[in-house]
Image 1 (cartoon, rainbow, N blue to C red):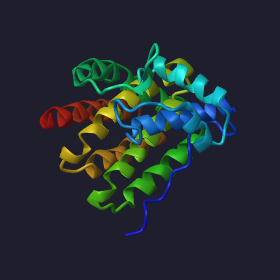
Image 2 (cartoon, rainbow, N blue to C red; image 1 turned 180 degrees about the vertical axis):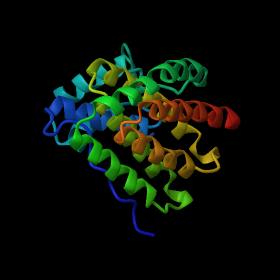
Image 3 (cartoon, rainbow, N blue to C red; image 1 turned 45 degrees about the vertical axis):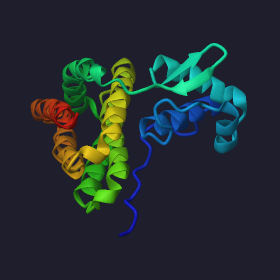
Length: 223
């Protein structure tokens, strides 16, 4: 079948070289294009991203704070291993903050943002993916969450949730081959996006909480 349609980035346009390198490397780590434990070669990444080494090195420093890479003296920098014992801690934070973000987004999103939310919901509702496209579906998951965080109009909440959602998505990607179906997890977003776009704050918060708890339950079943 044809490739899944791409969703536009919800992040700011025309980022600096350092910001662009950060986003590219971050998403490669989240989606396991760089596997846990693999070395990070700043020269190779600079060539791949079309940037100098300095922006890549700045990105690596930020990703250490995000717990996606770790540096060792005289050994180098590596993608962090995925620690499944962190699942409960990550889920605990998300269960509190995801409903808050959904509720805020439902009450504070601009008219233009509400139209975008509905367009993304429509795109996801029309998907007919094959099992082989599970990893690409996870990019939709990232896009939806980042869009809702942005619509919540609280930069501190947005940055915090992006960090925790990144860790959660990475855990999901590690066990992706063991999960029976990803499409159901993704199509849950349709109702959530519609509730936010329609300004139904209570329903949006309830659906966001359900999405996070069902994610944790699915992961625990395959561990």
